[in-house]
Structures are given as structure tokens and as C-alpha cells.
Length: 78
Image 1 (cartoon, rainbow, N blue to C red):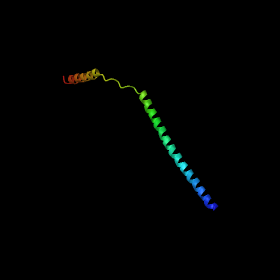
Image 2: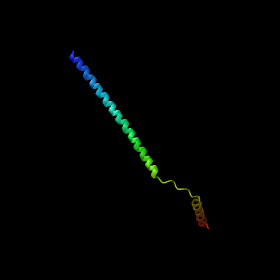
Image 3: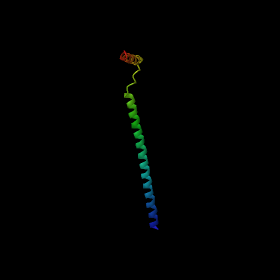
Image 4: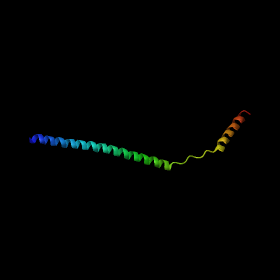
């Protein structure tokens, strides 16, 4: 009678340890993934904070370059 009770106790202890290990591994994976997401978000926020704003487009310079090109092309044919 003692042998069957001992088998039940060891089975329950083994099952409990296995379940605890599975919970530990899942918790570690979930926490690691959350920490990595926070680190990625912090890196993106830092990059955005350090980024330079885009330079305003200067229409005069663009049109002046086109005008210079036109003069150059016209002078080639003269």
C-alpha cells in the first residue's frame, strides 16, 4: 500500500515541476520579447529626436538651375 501512495506523490511532484518549468520558460520568452520591443521603441524615439528636419525646398534655386541649363544648351547651338 505504501508503494502505490509513494508513486502517486512522486508523479504529482514531477508533474508540478514540469508545469512550473513550462510556465518559467513562457514567462521568460514573453518578458524578453516585451523588453526587446521597449528597446526598439526607445531606439526609434532617439533616432527621431536626433534627426534633422527636412530642408525647405527653394524654388528659386531650382528654376535658376533650369535657366542656366537652357542658356548652356542655347549657347551650344549658336
